[in-house]
Image (tube, rainbow, N blue to C red):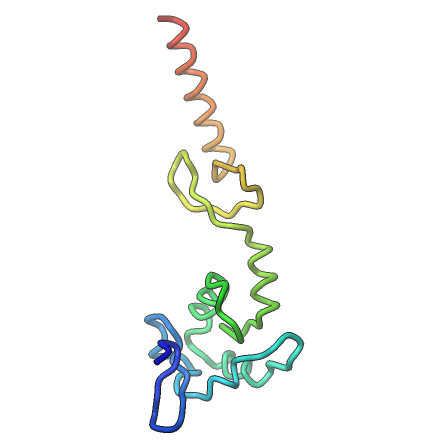
Length: 132
């Protein structure tokens, strides 16, 4: 059985992934309601999402899970794809080990502060090597 779907005899029900699924408004509904093709109207599914207490967690799951199809957190496939482009990709700063969004694959630091600290450390290490 697919982990995203439960089984009630002949009827297939929707079972969203994640710990937030217990409070999801879509739980137990027909999964076909949330599976939409490009350009199809998803207003009925989005109406269910608008009244859901787990809409934020669901949207985060949908955006971070590229293979997830259909409506997640009130966002269609196209809306989630656009959100991924706006967010950039996640990376980890080599200076402070904090995650950050980047648009450049060569970016190594989360911001100017970490970039300056790394530059100062490099200069200091270079001066110490030259002094010895």
